[in-house]
Amino acid sequence: PHPIKGEGIFAYVVLKGEDTIGEEIEMVQEINAIIKKEIGAIALCDSMIFVPDLPKTRSGKIMRRILRALAKGEEITQDTSTLEDPSIVDTIKNCCKQAEL
Image (cartoon, rainbow, N blue to C red):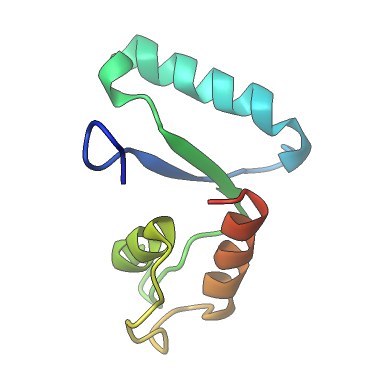
């Protein structure tokens, strides 16, 4: 929840290749600069968290409901048995706690 907008933009970032999570601050600034240039300042991310992967079904679809619930700090009530890797939900939860979201 955002105090002015109602809902803010929350981004889950999955790094590819050799990128490391240690350079998060620089990456957040770089990502926001690209968003501002390509889309505009209205679309800047209010929160951004780096995660190892996203919760996906076995067919490869991203489970946005789970990501939305995690961003709001809600308990996961959806069925996670259809996920390719159900443990990723707990991993993302821990990443959110470490980022103090």
